Amino acid sequence: MKIGIMGTGYVGLVHGAVLSSYGFQVTCMDVDVDKIKHLQDGNSPIYEPGLEELLRHSLRDGLLTFTTSPQQVIQESDVIFIAVGTPAKEDGGADLSYVRDVIQQIATYINGYKVIVCKSTMPVGTSRRIATYLDTLLTDRRSDFRADVVSNPEFLRQGKAVTDALSPSRVIIGTESSQAKETLQTIYQVHIQHHVPFLYTNLETAEMIKYASNSFLAVKISFINELALVSEKVGANIQDIATGMGLDERISPHFLQAGPGYGGSCFPKDTQAMLDIGEKNDEDLYIIRAAIAANEKQMKSMINKISEALSVNGTLQGKTIAIWGLSFKPETDDIRYAPSFEIIKGLLQQGAMVNVFCPQGMEQAKRMWSDFNNRIHYCQSEAASAQDADAIVLMTEWHQFRAHNWPMIAKTMRGNAFFDLRNMFTTDVQVREQFQYYSVGSS
Image (cartoon, rainbow, N blue to C red; front, side, top):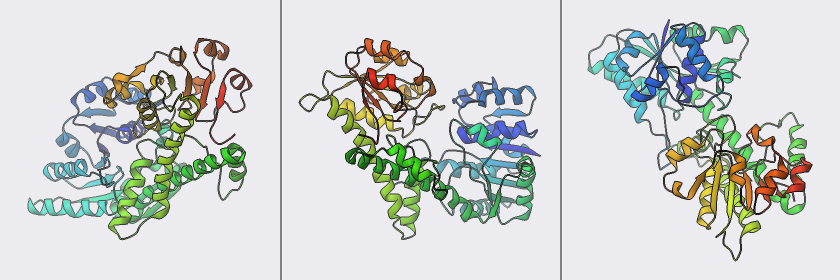
């Protein structure tokens, strides 16, 4: 069985590498010529632990190829995974133009029965509309070929995407075709053998599971962040509160870590899309709407926390602030919708100078933050960013930030404020002794 993957972003590239490691012949297609050239040389355009090694291994074995030709992928593949982007539009809905382009290409080049697997996150009802649209295109072209459409949402955590693809928490397959179901079971046979939970549903249910999962986690994060703001005012400790809550197996401790707000390529986009789905079906989703508002409030609260501690006469003019971490989480270079963007923007608006360091996120920031990049100083290390700074703001909990000569860091600074927005050092006596220490959710 030959597999084609349309799109080489996080989802497409990771799944292409993993499926080829299972012994399948996989061809990945992208319109970006430079990206394909790098991939053909075994160089991953994204930072994801373990991905580049997997890519190079499959390339050496001849199981993984890359191309810019949609015709090649479609005609040589039995199963075609759609893994193109579905970015948010201004109204919160998903932009499906890239998906539409893929379906048109499939209709143009189809040369036999195909199983089309929707891996991209798409609004509920999209997979069925894809099936109808493709049938219409094939009928108009008087084609005798047919295809079955499957919704198979991904649940990859950035920074752990390869591990999640190799050992998923569950596999959701939405289809009403027994032939397509059997095909996916063949592809995922290794997961069946390892007793990974499988759930078979219709198309709409599979699509909804993805949005429901991400929306629920966003709600959980916003909930604990709101409690953190209250805890600071009443003298409670949010970490102990989260621990106490998490001991209840109905709640669990996962996603109860207070911080500057959620970000990344999934939660902000998927919660907005979920609201859009609700509105289009005459349902106002109050809880999800509140979670989005609470997340925006949390980022503003972090700006206010820093400003209240450092400002003189209501301004941060003349202050230099070191930002440690730009990516929305550690072990990824993804800065999309990262809280660091809003917080840096807020500090700059108040007149601060900003030094930044991130182990992986700076190249993307330089490329994407063109509006105020000339006011950001990108540094070679976290220690360099702290020199002559009035404060350090820890934005992302990269493990390397733990290992420092804190007295030396403090000595090079002009001020001594340390804003730990991830609560990494709440029990570190040396950090608390060296700095005026501010955490999230404790007084």
